[in-house]
Amino acid sequence: MKSITIKGSERESVGKKATKALRNAGKVPCVVYGGDKPLHFSANELAFRDLVYTANAHTVAIELDGGDSVKAIMQDIQFHPVTDAIIHIDFYQLFDDKMVTMDIPVTLEGNSPGERNGGRLLFRKRKLSIKALPSKLPDFFNIDISKLKIGQNIDVASLLNDDFTILHPDSQVVVQVKTARTAVVEDEEGEEGEEGEEGATEEAAQE
Image (cartoon, one colour):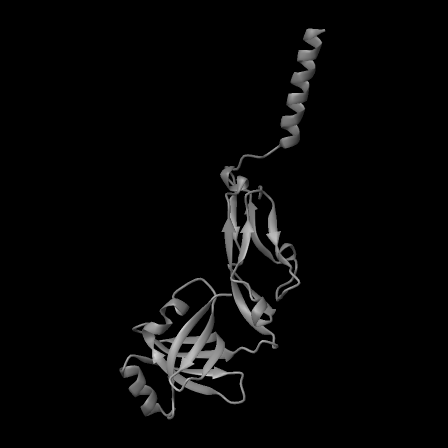
């Protein structure tokens, strides 16, 4: 999984006055959990742009002024109710030998023949929660829908992998094509039958 570097400063004071001063200076107070003790730090709000305002999933390398570096993932974020400015972020520290839970985005590739025939493409799960070691975290799930016909679906069972555990039932539908009133029913067997009859007629005529 791709990583984003956040450069910040460790916070010595975590009181309300200090937190307010940080926000007034355009900085975001943050906490990293999961280690021996919580790590409090702050960074410029713009430093989180590529992490927050994207559909992609990333790990984070937090580089502090003192030279320390921590690997983490974002767990929770709070926005100001009026301005939408970031006011706080919680992170969870990563360890190479410790499993972590994370939401991974789902992307679709190709064009569904079922949708072309008037069916409705329903994207049920745009993110899937998984549990894995940090080194096994995928950037995304890429699903090929180029053969998805009316009435068919792709479920979690088809995405299972030994590198991680998907925290959803195997029967959970991720994407499907449902029929609609204007849908054209695909009947491959009927088409083959017509071709066979036509071929038999031609052979009879030749005889």
